[in-house]
Length: 145
Image (cartoon, rainbow, N blue to C red):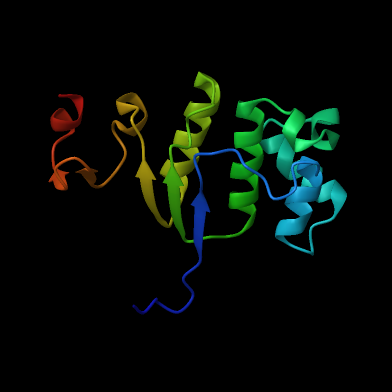
């Protein structure tokens, strides 16, 4: 298997396991890129709804939605051009799902997304593959069926 030069793949796992659950969101973002300082990490996290003292809490003490937003923030910080997302909406509330959908619509790279939420995938993917049949669904009406 060969990969294109400059390919940078980011993966979002459905589970909320952490290598260091005792770390804070700020520490996780700083670990992604050594050039990111604490102040920059807090600004990035705030864009994902992790504000104030939540950036200093232990990851394991955050809600599922907050942990998901920290993982998405870390992923966005990596500068990937291909995203593989496994059920990224599982722990998110409606407004966070909408924000994620808008961000993915603006993303200039490629997205491979696994989702059981038909409402989330409506109106924006170029191609949809039904995993049960491995068939490409060409019309939005097929997704709704």
